[in-house]
Amino acid sequence: MITTDQAEQFHTPGIVRGRVRQGRWRRLCRGILLTENGRLHRDQQLWVAVLVSGRDAHLAGWTAATEGGVQGVRADPIKVLVPADRCRSIRLPRLPEDMPAVQTHRTTVFPQRHRQIGSPPRTTVARAVIDGAAWAPNDNEARELIVRSCQQGRTTVASLHEVLRRFPMLRRRRLILQTIADAEGGAAALSEIDLVRLCRRHGLPLPDLQRIRTDATGRRRYVDAHWASSHLLVEIDGGHHMDAQYWAADMLRQNQIWIAGDRILRFPAWLVRSDPAAVAAQLREALIAAGHPTLVGSQAQTTERW
Image (tube, rainbow, N blue to C red; front, side):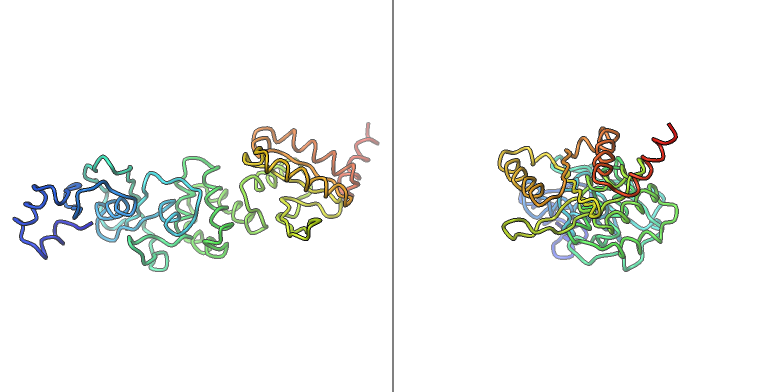
């Protein structure tokens, strides 16, 4: 991937035009050449996006997060960040058909420590996550990007806070702050954050998240949510838990928990999100049945008033 100017540093304009005309090279768009004639693969698409965006352009948002190792987030459109002092607006040339959409964003805040040396150049993962959360098409995708980046160890809560401090008026700033706090508290999945938000909204005591528990075989297992004083555990199951092999293993672990004397509730992740009131009602009943001091006391006061 080279620009026309770069090609003409090594060849005359006539040679460059001849190789394009012969089909040995591809002219992808104005000013950008591919020194072969095949379809673009992902790395080449990213280079095209940076080159057409001009001087000092960096991959950004979920694109930079993915290049930084965050898995499971959206791939397109390709996001690019450019300094705001470059120009008032960025007009991209017409891109080839084997290119995904490219979206450029201008920024007045782009210090050197937010830039990652790479090929192509990109923002750091922390900056990419904050930008991506603000640009996401919905709140759930914004929260998912933050949680995945922390859970996968691609950035830290401290790094996210350092970037966020530079953007006091950022879109979704409150939601981003809350999600970072939830990730810092141990949430390793969006479903666990949904559970914590549900507990806050319905006045339930907050659980400990991602607690380690040793099963009957001696293996260390992580429990999604745990109210230790009430001996109550909650597991939030994603779609893969419906597979037969996971379902059987989940049942065996659940039986072991009951045998050990603890209570366990299981909820599908979609139910926590779509019908939080039903989940909260069962959680409240389970905590009261287990004698949780806060809820037992409030129940007694309510009964006395009636």
